[in-house]
Image (tube, rainbow, N blue to C red):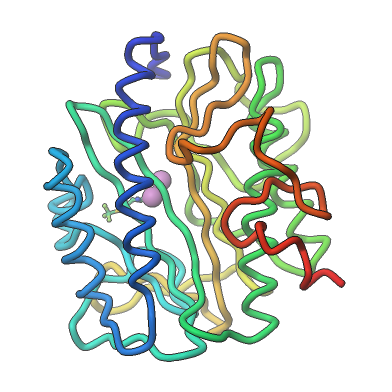
Amino acid sequence: MINLKNAAQIEKMRAAGRLLYEVEQQVRASVRPGVTTADLDVLAEQLIRKGGAIPSEKGYDGYPCSICASVNDEVVHGIPSDKRVLREGDIITVDCTLKLDGWQADSAFTVGVGAISPEAKKLIVVTEQSFWQGIRQCVVGKRLGDVGHAIASHVRSHGYEPIRDYTGHGIGREMHEDPSVFNYGDPGRGLRLRKGMTIAVEPMICQGDWHIQNDPDGWTVRTRDGKLCAHYEHTIAINEEGYPDILTLPDFSWEHTPLNADGFPRVSYLAEDGEEQA
Ligand code: MF3
Ligand code: CO
Ligand code: CO
């Protein structure tokens, strides 16, 4: 069942989204060689609670932490650990969900630790680009298949593949609501997008073979071939005009945020103007 949200409910989710953005900006700024993934988890939990919110991941199906911290070939659900020391050249995905005043926000980003290889940087950039290709389809009248198709065709044009086993999702009072938002699909197929839909769009993109394997810890998921995976997630709401508001990217606006040379909004890695495309 799809829970459509009214304007007042979307404003509550926007408040949650703004707090999550601020938390994640601080976590991102703390990523550097020598930091452990447990350090990032502690920081995130402190900031979430200081903001009057609850870390939704903690205790979700027994998950022990406030963020998922997935390094290099880890796809999702890496458990923060004081033994996992970040090293120059690693890439790390931080995926965090919080609940403020009863409403959820969910967002993830991948960032390099110090200097990273051109291959790793390109994977992160193309993953973020694919989010924007998907989001451009998140307008009333389009269907979820259009969103998934836009994501998959963009990453495939660079030789990458979307992970199949995990998807985006509806979000609201619960972290995971209907519908599932696949990162591949057939244009013109699937659920029609409507005003008041709130969904997490989250391409998880790997360098080639999308098959995954599970660690014995019961949580960590990694690529079977050991190659890198990147992830980029925002919580969005289809607004009254039928266009997507990005609730976890409060400073972004379709009218005012400038585009880079490749035509993507200058946010996150895409602010570096597509120089790696040259
Ligand atoms: N934030 C994740 C998502 O994007 C879910 C986290 S799973 C948990 O859907 F177990 F860590 F909570
Ligand atoms: Co998430
Ligand atoms: Co999500």
